[in-house]
Image (cartoon, rainbow, N blue to C red):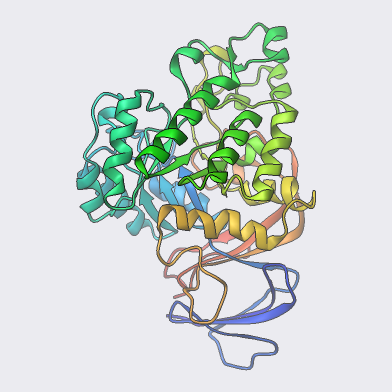
Length: 434
């Protein structure tokens, strides 16, 4: 395995230091290191962060390889600075058995661009009627710890209670897609002034908030871990803040797009802005940013949701919901949180690496950039400014809401256990330089 000397990197945005990596581990950190390395990297002006961890990625394989594969999705992850992703269960077939989660896990191992941790379905077929093989998925080679019917809500309170009770035995977590289905029938966008003016079916904030309120009470009753996916409203923030103040085992995530975009964009009727949960108001965006800054919301998760062109370039009502996000996540967080003074780079590392790894119980990820730690690292250039060109993405799909926009920052390099998957902003075949 090759050794690397990263010179003059600003660890978590601090003073410039050198980082020496060999055999997959950070061996030395200091100034003017003189040890010989196989590869020298000039990191002047670059920030060194722990490899990012995404709690919420749709890799689509098996079943929808026209939208994404484990290979292309993990390549996109590496280009975005991620060294581990949690692959959601809404595949075809659904990841509700040990066999399917092991298949996804092995595909991730074969690809080699980042670690892939499958998320198991809570219910069989995501149908909300019968618990899936939670124990078998946990005991499988994939060692599943996170379970979610994401894309659908576990709306039956008894099923949700049973799932929380079951996963408590092995310190698992149920990640809930909070959407009361009866309140969102026919909904197309956020319910509010814009939906009224456009005549589109409204998606009320209370449809999210009611489920979160129920589930934090269930988590407290059972004493089991609940994770709230893609929080999108100011009211949801207040419920989560209340639950955490009581010491209940509740964590939450927010997507980059909910930190930056609002429902005003829907006036274009461009289906690239159609997403679940929907884009909300400027007031909601502000509340989400404040909650991420003060730790009420634990993590940024991409909810990377690739779709083929024909599923998005159509009339609004027929379009699929979702946006790709792995390759732009860190840039959006820089714009929404760092450049606004709400988070420093240490805070970004906490919300995009340390806490997500802890929530997902991923050993070896979310670790400090310190001697003796696994060399899961990203080198990020915060001074870069560039226009988003979807055709340059590694993901198989192009449904980004940022096409043509200028965003700050760019990933210069990503290391997975000391092996570069990205160098100078370009993908490197795993092992090519090892």
